[in-house]
Amino acid sequence: MELKGSGKVIIANWKMNLAVHESVQVIRRLRKLLDTRQVPDSIELVVCPSYDALTAVREELSGSKIRLGGQDVFWQEKGAYTGEVSASMLVAAGVSHVLIGHSERRKYLQETDEMVNKKVTVALAAGLIPIICVGETYEERSIGHTDLVLMRQTIEGLKGIPLHTGQEIIVAYEPVWVIGTGQAIEPPMAEHASEVITQSLIDLYSKGIVESQTRIIYGGSVDETNIRDFLNLQKISGALVGTASLQPEKFISLLALL
Ligand code: PGA
Image (tube, rainbow, N blue to C red; front, side, top):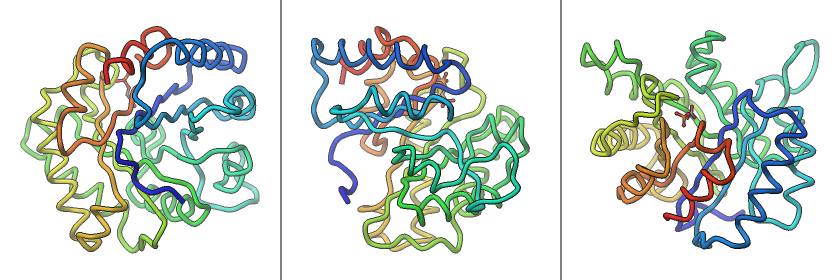
């Protein structure tokens, strides 16, 4: 398994936006644009469509370096869990990465750190790269609890989960209060959050493991006006992009800046 590429990772989170035929169109357009625009080879690209579009998107991605990601996973392997999808089902659909604990799931579906922990466990066991989303709400920031929240979500989400050779995790720092607003945070705030998350990871794993098997990325209103500011930060290894990843032209112009 390829570990922790030296370049940056850009993850497109389409959320519940594109139906199957729209997802296919976006990928076709994206691939065409990628042929004509300069995007550094070192950039790793992952797209996360809705479950129903995974197979069609995988077919469209054949022969490309773009990887496929899931937006969630359930912690049981199989059985009477209506509406859920297991890690092995994702693997069978060609998925390599999976978002876990996105703030929208924490907010609308009451997902807890304990559930995140179970999901990360099964994702790693299935050979997937979990992208664990952590981040504070506006209220938490305004009472000075940002660092505490980041530490709690990182430690509770990962405690008791060993990272074996060849396994990798990505932690996405996503301040909840800027997601989807069009207004990102100041880059130094992301740098600070990355330091807090790194310290929490070092509490769980050895420094060597943290350096070679974990990466921290930023997400929250990333677009072509600010992507460089975040990716230039030494402690930020990539970006999780929502809104700006839905339009191929916009997404490509963002990638072409890297
Ligand atoms: P946004 O979404 O880029 O639209 O803010 C990011 C995310 O929620 O992952």
